[in-house]
Each structure stands twice: as structure tokens, then as C-alpha cells.
Amino acid sequence: MRNGKAAWVVCAVLGVGALAVAASEGAVKYRQHTMSAIGGHMQAIVDIIRGQVPHTGHLPTHANALAELAELAPALFAEGTQGGDALPAVWENAEDFEAKLGAFKEATANFKAVVDAGEDARGAFRGVGQACKGCHDSYRAE
Image: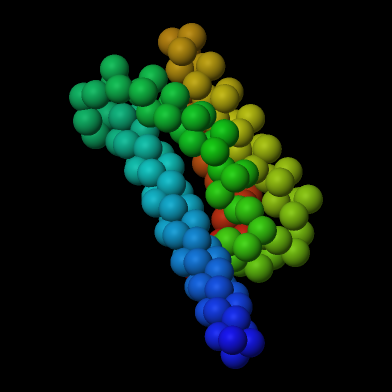
């Protein structure tokens, strides 16, 4: 009976460990999908601003999406989700990384406000790009 209990405990521990690994892998993939969505909106905005597409009326949709995705970004880098394109420095320099995510949130909120006001948004969009670059330079693998 004791061996049966011990075997059950070992299986339970291994099962929980496997679930944790699967959850971590899922979190990394989710982060990658979300960051790809940000990149897609960024490229669509570039296409609109450069006049490569006639969809200027779509700019508010993309600006709103960026601002909303920026709000999600901090949750994408929870402890235990190391991997993918995120360098270990994300967790080693958590305070600086959080500040960079804050700059991204601020830049996307500003961009959205400028777009919503119907103003020329190129300068505000450069701010979003700089916020992205500031984080990617230190915290994203090539």
C-alpha cells in the first residue's frame, strides 16, 4: 500500500510539473502572438501614414488596438514565462523593464489621443516606435 501511495505522489508531482511546463510554453506562445499583433498594427499604421493604402479611416482602430495591447503587455512577462524572444534580462532587470513597458503604454495612449483628436499623428507614432525600440534593444533576442 505504501508503494502505491508513493507512486501516486510521484505521478502527481510529475503531472503538476508537466502542467507547469505546458502552461509556461503556452504563456510564451501567447506572448509571441500578442507581440505579433502589435507588430501587425504598427506595420498597418506605417502603410497608412506613408500613403501606401487608402485606409486613413482605419487609423483610429489601429491606434486603439495598440493602446489596448499595451495595457496587456505587463501581464505577458510574468515570472515563470521565460523563453521565446524575451531575454533573461527581462526578469533580471525587472524594474527597468517595467519602466520601458510604462513608456510604451504612455506612448500608445498619446498616439491614440492624437489620432482621436484628428491631429497629425506622425510625431506621436515616432514616439511609439521609439518606445518599442527602447525595449527591444535591451530585452528582445534577435
